[in-house]
Amino acid sequence: MQVVERKSIMKDQLIAFLFKYGAITLLILIIFYFTSVSPFFLTYDNFSDILRSISIVTVLALGVTFTLVVDGFDLSVGSTMSLATVFTASLMVWYDLPLWLVLLLPIIVGVAVGLFNSFLIVVIGIPDLLATLSSMYIVAGLHRTYTEGYSIYNHMPLTSGGTAIGEFSNAFLWIGQGHLLGIPVPVWIMVILVLASYCFLNYTRWGRIFYMTGGNAEAATLSGVKVKKIKCMAYVISGIFASIAGILFTARVGSGQIDAGAPLLMEAVAAVFVGYSVLGAGKPNALGTFFGAAVIGVLLNGLTILNLPYYGFDIIKGTVLVLALAVTYMYAKNKFSTNSL
Image (cartoon, rainbow, N blue to C red; front, side, top):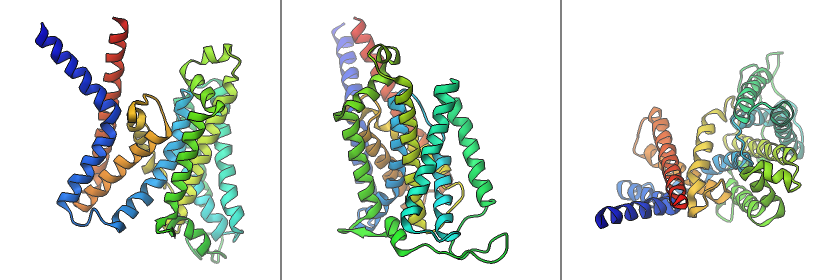
């Protein structure tokens, strides 16, 4: 009996350790492994590329984090990012607008998508998953219709005849390609947004209200919280983050690529769930989302250096997500069993 009990205790301790430190431990092990097998991995240029890449995924994932905090889920962030990407490019290339409008108008578009999702979920009452799945297809159709299926680039030929009058300015490209104090500008933006989101969710009254809404909407309502308003805010914030990710992507590649956000949706969702358990949070959180994006970004970069075929990447991302979910739910199951005793 003592042997069985000891094994059970060791199993519980292992699950608890993996739950709290699994993502961070995995990140360290991945870095050590790829450093040992490739001399090109642990270099400034490579880590600069990794951070620049995960900055976009992290910003996109932060939006998903806010919706999960209020017990929702936003599947439309990838399409919203794609719409923001081509819309940003069109404002600069097709219409030659000033930089402040190029940055502001796509964010307003993100707000509009968030309000549309809120209308479907809060007013009509469609479940979050189904509502955002529907809007994902609607927004995807909008950005393809808007561009007529073409990517947007400097002085491109127009279907109406002639060529586009504008081009991407150096000031705009600096947002995605420039450096500040030796660190890529998108990384600074990511760090600022992660810290702002972390402080908002953990140290403000509104953050506590967000978590209260997600934890028990009925109890939150009885406490005087306007649950519908909070959910609406979460989806608007998600749309804003998706638009910022689209702007960063456009500035990074110097073109407006259709369906730019589609491949990043799965990475963003995986980052959020991998980050659930970072330092034992047990809930959606901004810091965990960053670590989740880092794990996936470093892993994919290392596999690229090792020349793993790109079509195998989805298997890796799916496996990481399954492992993260398995640890999270095993920990929750053990904790429930312990409490019930």
